[in-house]
Image (cartoon, rainbow, N blue to C red; front, side, top):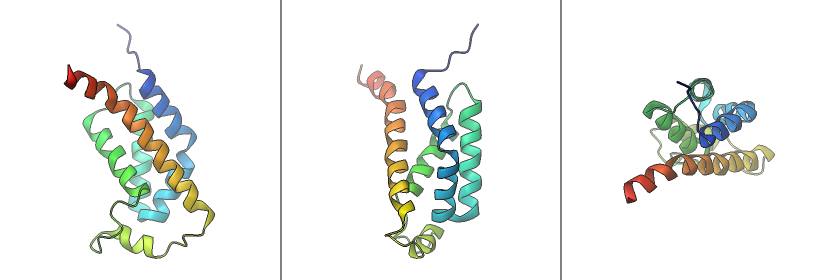
Length: 120
């Protein structure tokens, strides 16, 4: 039997692969080396798999939370310290926002079939 990868998964793979360097740089700026390692592992996992498992989906969610500054107001999280050192006028800030939006769009496409199945 053939393992077919869904077009939505293929689109995500292409996005992660083509934006790998930018995503890892954003992870470094927003979360340090642990975030870079997690981002690198996520990209490797998604790009080498034929299906997305729960762990990968959770990792995608964590990456999106990092890129969208979800936890920067929590002083107990490292993201707060990294965020405090950012210059909001730096050109890479706009790139990070764009990557967060693009990743969200890919995640919404992945979740659409699940929502449709639950509605039926």
